[in-house]
Length: 214
Image 1 (cartoon, rainbow, N blue to C red):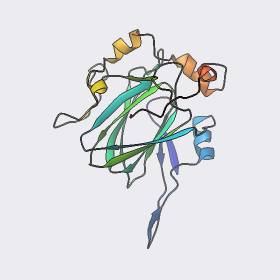
Image 2: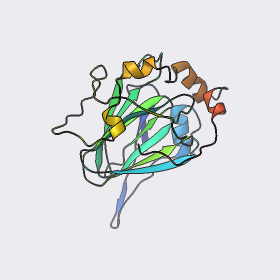
Image 3: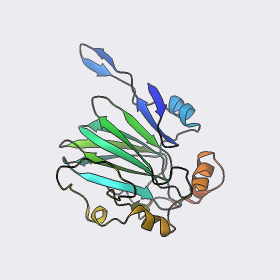
C-alpha cells in the first residue's frame, strides 16, 4: 500500500495494492504498523462503524465537541462517495480548509483523519456503504454538525439536485458560529493527544450508548 499526505496536516490517503487472480482481487485495506509509521503515532482500534446511504445522501460535516475526539480511518466498501475532510481545530494553520477525495469500492482508497477534523460525504450511488474504524468509542451527545454548504469553507459538492440530509444536518450552523460556541478542540490540544501527552482523551468517560448515524 502507499500512504500519502494531503494538503491538510494529519490527513492521509491510503492507496492499496490490488493483487488479481482468476478468482478476483485481494488487497490489504491498511496495516497498523505502516499507518502508525506514516502518521507518527500508534493507531489503536476501539470501534468500527458502517453507514449505508441512498444516492445523493449528504452526511456531515460532522466533528466532535471536546473532550470526545476520535481519529478515523474511512473507507467506501460499496458504491462511491465524494469524501470531504474539514479542519475544525481552533488555531490550526489550516483551520476551515478542506480536502476532497473520490472514494469507491473498486479502488479501495481510504482516508485517515486525526482528532479534531470534521468529516462528511456525498453518496454517488444507491446502497453506498462506508466503513469507519475509530481509535476511541463514541460518546452519546458528543457529535457536532457544521453546514456543508458554508460559503466560507466552499466545498465543491457539484450537486445537480437537493441532497437527502438528516433534520439536524439540514439546520447545521456555519463554521464561524460553531467555532464561537467554544466547543471545538484546539490545535494544541489535538497535538497533545497525538503525542500521548496528558489531555483530553484521559478524561473520556465510558461510552454509554451505540454510535450515532454519521
